[in-house]
Image (cartoon, rainbow, N blue to C red):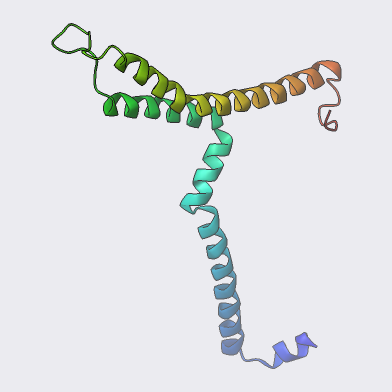
Length: 135
């Protein structure tokens, strides 16, 4: 049915219809590209792909921020503070802040190591069947 109707269209009408179809297709692909290249999607893919680097960067940034926030213990008195508990308090604060970070990093490293080791074992046990099922 579509063929007889297309044959009845003039070349100008057919060109306009093709242009409309191309615009609709372009709008669809542009929305897909905008979705794929959005900052949220880029950030999510980056974190998934480079998890260890993000954890390390967050740890370094956190330590740098803590060093900037907490006052330096080296002063006029050669590193001795008037309050002898200030060092313990800052150490406790550091442990309190870094405890969850280390727990998360340990979990991520163990998961990555487990996946790598399973892949290594699969390749050694059956080198011909590299796409076997999950162990």
